[in-house]
Amino acid sequence: PTIYAITPTFTRPVQKAELTRLSQTFLLVPNFHWIVVEDSIKKTPLVTNLLASSGLTYTHINAPTPPHYKLGKNDPNWEKPRGVEQRNAALRWIRNNLNESHNGVIYFADDDNTYSRFLFKEIAKVKRVGVWPVGLVGGLMVERPICDKATGKVTGFNAVWKPDRPFPIDMAGFGINLKVILEKKDALFAYEIQSGFQESEILKQVTHRDELEGLADGCSKVYVWHTRTQPPVLNTETLLIKKGKSSNQGIEV
Ligand code: UGA
Ligand code: MN
Image (tube, rainbow, N blue to C red; front, side):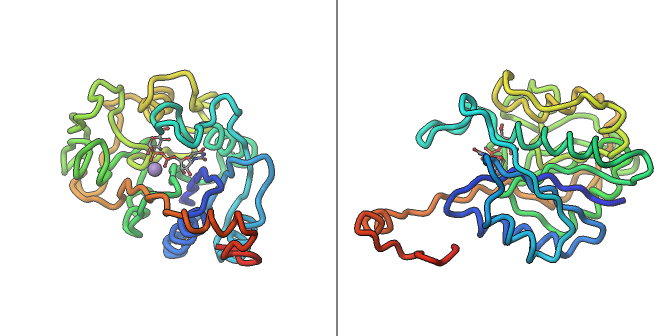
């Protein structure tokens, strides 16, 4: 199958570094199609050029988060969901441009995580909805489904953070076959739900706990990490900008 990885992304100092890291991992993956969705009113030159020179098969779209739902600079990040508008735009693109003749699996690949190339071999096995462990999330070293090694049947989850979530796993911990996305043609993410429930929101529309396919060696291997990039300290840059002498005049960073 082709792996369709959906990545919401937004302009900030670390954006090019994040997308560079991702693109170079994705180059190691056979049959890969990157759907990059900018949280912006227009497609930016930075992302346009990065994709054009990436060597990847890609689709570049933009879908701005409505201002009312956008996080402010100093808002705590759990206050509003992130990536909703962008992932939904990608799902609409998929439903408008792909059909039953395509063999694919959909994966939501945020731009700040760290992906092992071995993850994609697991994603490629997803028949309907597959799940696997995610490292460094939910306050744990690893948050994971508990599953039977032989059959892949999922019998529970080890989550401690909001364990009452219908599907207590991170966005990076599941993949959905394209045929399921096409069958459940109205399944989307939503704004007005409890924080931390985005994953459950989409999963409850497309599957049930007892039909999940536990992958990554009986959910015992970690191939993706919920890393979060620390915003860089740019206090000196701020001074230079005031003097009209920013360090990156004419240089894309
Ligand atoms: C956790 C999950 O890992 C996310 O998949 C989920 O969307 C989020 O919680 C949530 O509950 O909304 P976290 O690391 O806190 O993630 O989220 P971010 O990595 O900050 O954002 C997820 C994606 O949305 C990233 O690809 C990011 O670039 C993008 N994003 C973030 C935007 O497109 N616009 C923004 O204003 C902020
Ligand atoms: Mn993140």
